[in-house]
Amino acid sequence: MARNLFENAREAVNRFTQNRDGRQPSQEDMQAAKQAIQSAYSECSQEEKQQLQQLEQQLENHHQSMR
Image 1: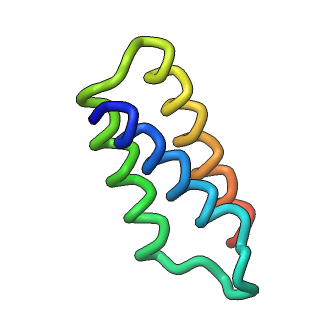
Image 2: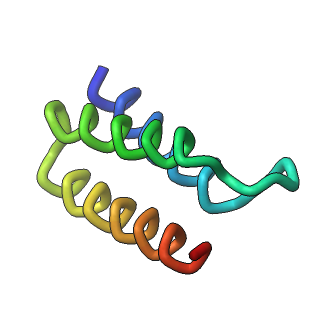
């Protein structure tokens, strides 16, 4: 289960940052990514927590660059 939450978080951040379908990511996309990260924190290893922190930073950096 923890692995799925971690993978979901990574995929949500990728969807937000990679703009695959040619549209600007929405605020809802960002919130979904943040929620996926928070859910993953509850059931992951210390190493995965560090990766989640990096994903949070990547998400925030991308959000700031869109402004």
